[in-house]
Length: 596
Image 1 (cartoon, rainbow, N blue to C red):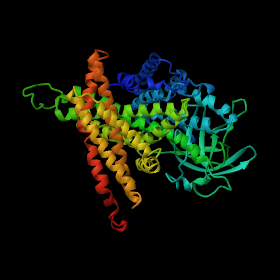
Image 2 (cartoon, rainbow, N blue to C red):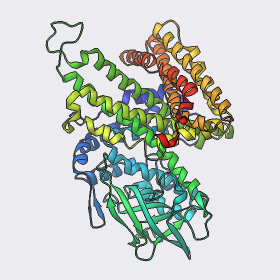
Image 3 (tube, helix red, strand yellow):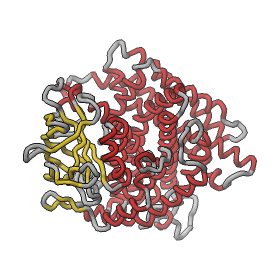
Image 4 (spheres, rainbow, N blue to C red):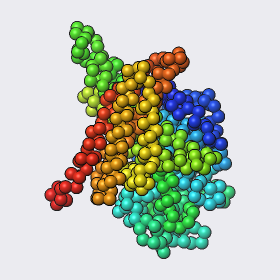
């Protein structure tokens, strides 16, 4: 099985052309500097992904992790790979220079993260969660905690986790029972947390758990949740490690996929209470944790893209080598590989076009995060923040749902061989299956998109984006019939979204359940439309390059053809989704629950 190869040409195109200089404009302290630096970072990351991480993906999946006592051992090669990862500085890529980070943009970090996830998703989950934990501490903890914990977390010496879920409290965190009793300058934490990714492992010398718990006088429900730093090993004032804290891993989950990523059940306070340190103020923990959650949601969307890309590469290699049957229109052709079959070409183009559409959307969203955080213009920052908030559930929900579908399609390209673990195709489907569930299920993302991001502001954020998409549809060149057709299909998608928006704004006053019943279809409607918007922009840019004789002509022709395919094969789904939403949402509510 060929190792993963980073699609650097498309990554560079999205960053340098589709997003363009805007990725550096309006950001006062970007460390990206030049496109040459960005290119060098992508190239070196691609080498690590191909040479170090990808070769461990299959062996890690087969071996998995093992728990001995309360210590989790990662698969063979994992510790060496992590040490290489840290020594090369990848753990600190986008972290703040104040704490030893390199300060590169979230846009560049997103591209690099895509590579880690494609090459070895189970490995990539550890630095991804650490990044989220460092962001939560940086934004909400007091200076002493930041100075004590962040330098070594940023360096990758210590890892971070997110402890939300309990056996009785999943997505609804109002049922959290973990307790935090004040004791001088710290708290004593007791309780049990489940589904803690990298909650115990042997890659770093310390693990910094961010734990949701309730203090004795806390209000009921989510209003009474606080957030605590609870280290595996206590940290002395000079930053050295002290004694083991009162927490332990009591089991790790036997999962469908991501076998090399340990998912721990952690017990806090079996011997009197684990020592924890309050982040920010009591009872504001859930809002603090959402800092980490939003980082994680975008990162999980990247996982859907990354697994699509890897499944596509594997399927493409197989289709180029597998000799089977006689393609229609090629009678007597002996030795033809299955890529000559029309339906195999359809499947491969669907995977390729979806990967490129998702990449564009995820990177654009990351760039918007950079602008929202670092722009010196308050109005630009506010506008970017609103756009980023709107796009995040789409990136998370649409990219992961599509990633599962594309990983499944990769198995289909392999035929019966895809169902056999030996080829590796099945692993990507197994690994992808969790992405629509953790960090908020697709239903939660869709509910957020409908209620908070669309209806709450009367559709203002949605309409602003729709106007931008509509302008792109109107601007596409009519000199190339392919671009003209892309423009027509994109304009139709805009019409479809407008119809749905008007319906939602109307029916919310009649029956609040109707927008909820339509929410997942609404999320997909936006995902397909945003993908089409950015593929259309890419096609126009490539057409312009061809006219003036700039750039790689093969890349540009390929991009236009891929965008044209997406326009004809994916975009028409918006009309069907609009019909389902407007005419069919009521049927979701028709059947009495007793009659299911």
